[in-house]
Length: 300
Length: 266
Image: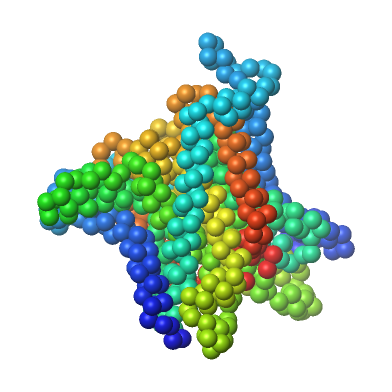
């Protein structure tokens, strides 16, 4: 221990403690630096066009990939599908997550609270692929729902590989994120406020609408932003539940890298996706304020 | 609290829908793994453990599972020290440009996973380490690092600076203070964070998919590749492994810090 202390005082002198905290932060900063480096590579690659006759990338930079991305009808439809999907998923998830969180926070029953927490964490910890696999078993052509329908003599329905099934899978995937971000905001609202609103004659709808929702605004915005950006950029649900017909932007990027091998075009799509995501977040900031993102927890 | 009946009804309908939606895939996978038939049908053909027995012979599934565990271990080994130090530093010191550093450290959450994955793929490709397993662990550590920092820093806010001063006035050096005072007091955060990192890394699909090749597929990628061909019950049995690990993680989390910690207001 003494040797350690001696060695430590050499690298971290008592009085010159200015660099100490930054030294503690440096491993994390370096790790995240890998991402920044990756982004730089994506940016660079996105400016190089693929020569389809030689399969080599151009030496010079040009904006040709971006022009193509913004004009190609297929890409445009993929982008719209992603934005529309993310918006619907965000609305639905918030609608479902709000009452869930509300009851979970307010209930007097410790058992019910624990049950709701476990029902929340279990899918959260299981991962997207296994969950999507479960939905395949349930909704597939020979799936459980169709088996049950068959028992009462109804023709099998085609419930998979369409837009609604992707959105449904996304809502289920996003739900725990939304609840975990809403919970602190709802916990912070004192119960007495509701009692006060009611004693002043507000109906429960009025209490919800004019008291609880405004007070939970920051939590709702935080949850909404996380759900919006995560579902906008999701890959697994469109890939598995959409069966290749309902691609989101992430799937289009993947295909450019691994099917078409046009890394330049794929990179330009990745840059566009990051730009669209940031733009949406910025618009929401402008419209309703920043809210408290859960990660604001870091600055206590 | 006396909720009106109408409110209760409205809320509970939505909650029941949510619970069913949350739990249905898990329950169905559990059920499907126990079928004695060769395809998954409802009502099931009968109960058996034969698909679990079949797993023993499926070498590629076992290998994929072991690789996933490796990836998760590497992820924790990297993110635990990095995230713990950063989490403590962010709370303990008034840093110049503190807000900027926080925003920077949140980048893994603000950059879409597909962007992070492709970026890391290009970086790793450039240095020529694509095709080995440990870079996948590094990648999952990077993309989930904010969870580790968050877990540690939220338990470090409860840290009383006087305690560290007291230790030092009793003659402890900074290293001793760190290991005997600072570290134990943020231990719940370290455990929570490491558990989250382990689970998220074990389950990580997209970044894994981008960074592995056919020789080193991880379990989520293996499952993904298989469900694209045919759905057989042995896949359900292997999915139950994920469910079991998730249950274990929840049990540990609940025992050590209590799941209710996630409901706390900041």
